[in-house]
Image (cartoon, rainbow, N blue to C red; front, side, top):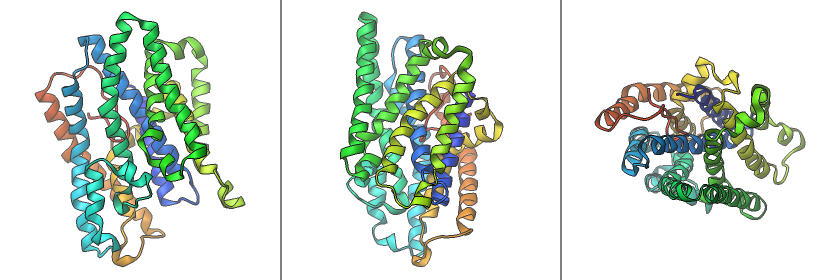
Length: 359
């Protein structure tokens, strides 16, 4: 069964990211909260799909999993890393001499740690989040196979181990919020994985009925309330009225991880009806391409001059058009072709930031 409210949440997340990049002074934490939400969503839907596969086939087919991830990720990403460097050169962007290094970091999925140590990847700076998810895709299915094997012999030990893994990641995130350089906290895989693992834990919680048993009929009220809090976190105007507040961004990022995990829990149980509207769900469908293109185009500096003012809105409209065409004419056909060659899918596919569902 397709969880349509997760599509809507994905649409909301990309709206927050775009708003944060277009008007940072108005939506200062849009990117922070939006990307965090994508991470939690990704952990949730990937784990849900893998658990469905275990239920039906008794095992996880790693080859199938990774081939489907490649089919979803690479077409749009490949188009981006070919076209955008050409634009950098043609438009006489100041980064034209180093864009090759930026592409290298992006295609090797090392952009997360490149940025964590202070590197500036220019028009491809946002590919750090794709690197984080790729690391997760490489590791988590293997870990889940181990947890499932343990659960068949010692169920309680498996649950305890999962809780320990998630707790360790969350604790490190909290500690890093205090002690780590901001760039490391914001971009590194080891600090970002807490959001992904909370999504994984949420998938397990929904599977065993924890949300329904705990909240029952109150799910809609509580889910809607937490979603509103998540959005409010992105439009905090304190930095505007009071000037820079040391450490605020760090804690907004960390609190957003927890809020996003709760929203995903409720949305998965149908607890946030406001997300189940067609425009948000459609936006969720093209969110991957929109995420990729809007940032890259906004960061272009034709002739050395940054894009500013109303022109930024025009660039976002262009990015939405490119993302839409890319999805319907390029990405979706590739996904469908890969599925036809493989075995039928087990459940409706949902994915996070770098894997918007195919239809």
